Length: 431
Image 1 (cartoon, rainbow, N blue to C red):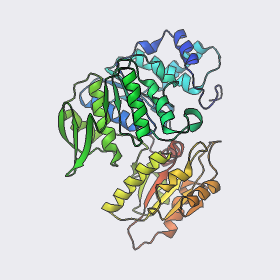
Image 2: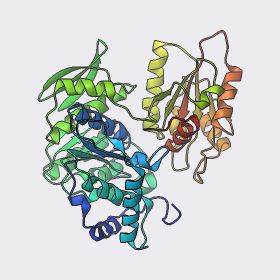
Image 3: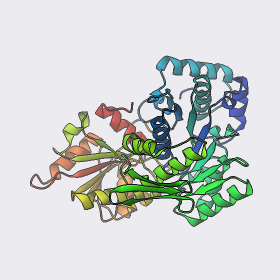
């Protein structure tokens, strides 16, 4: 981080030059499932991994950003077992080799780390590689992949507007850049018709065999079960382990994507995947750890890194569903960075929340000051107060909680960086 510029510099020239110096490892990968989208990328990646591992396949997984440790970006597939985060010595060696090949030339951190992805995944045999886009698609460093087994594009909404455009159709055009002529594409649930139109027209222009959620495949809850259906048939499955109704569409997109990538999926595999899928920091419940000593006894504490208006809507819907099942006072502890739309995020929680506590994000120059963030919450119709730390906010919630009532429900989120801080402080980093 000290050697290379932060942020994004969208271009494929630097990464192409670097990979050429490394012997083009991106051309030596197992079949790639390439995933883009504003929201749901990580969840569909987690479902794809769970499906493949349930069938005994080995799957490498690249995600970003990490929550606590850099290693989280690289999971190395293990035949017949659960993939493991990359070993420290193997990771360090790959970073050194990439840095030597770069020879001090201008390049971003994400481009260095993407080259590391290709080094690691090309040198460790596996049945598949699931690779998540960092930002956008067309000029993202991962888009040097020329022949993915399938491209997957998840829900698109407004985010990263300075880089990708200020309308969903412009953002959709950037995400559609991962489609490759004649190769399969799976389009997940899209909230905006304008985005869907761009994705479908791009697929048609490039002659990509396409499968679209709601048209070619779908999923819904029925009698406490997940019903999945596509042209291959229907499956009656357990509800996904990941909470929230939005995960039904994410699970469906993963099932269809793994099929499109050429893998045989059985109903037994799907059942196992729904029961074992995991994705840290996304509606993850904290049941133990150091931070819980600051919270009211019996409080239900969730962390989620969603940070844009679209993510706010699905998280708020999940909180509303929790409220229907068991009514508890809901409090938010939120930290955000200044490239996000805090008012848009907060508006989704109108009518649900008792109070918002706004906190800083440790070590981030781009964080929104908690006082300013509190004003954004007020602008969205919520009551808010700035706090110095998450622990202090939990103590404040404890102070106002009624000991005679059910303990509160607390959501900590607004940024993956804040969630990373919380998991680190709590002593529960992803494994």
